[in-house]
Image (cartoon, rainbow, N blue to C red; front, side, top):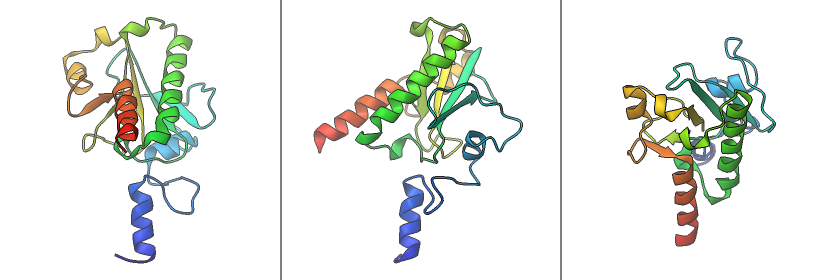
Length: 166
């Protein structure tokens, strides 16, 4: 592959479409973040680069998704420079829990599904609480130390380790 095709493939691999400001019209999370999906309400978010909304298949009484407004690939495409983004996503998740009267942060699970176990190829943080009330399938699906789910803290640690190794 050479020329424009190679550049387009590289942009897609990084999770953004070339020349469109980080928007992928085929991506449901891009459309939700831009209020183009009337069935999904955005929750209040103090970070204009992020959007937050309820998961359509909640795994806990509080199950929210925090996504960048700009299209980004899954968590496996992230680099060390994305650590502040992941931390901001976590802060937005905590803030939305607090706004919904949930304050026991020892009973929260925040993380990402590791490829190929992602249903949507747009970076999204799952915020679940109380984790102690997740059902059997949710405990399996959002299982800590599995090869299909990585907590936000584990992702940050992995990204820091990659930086130290290079």
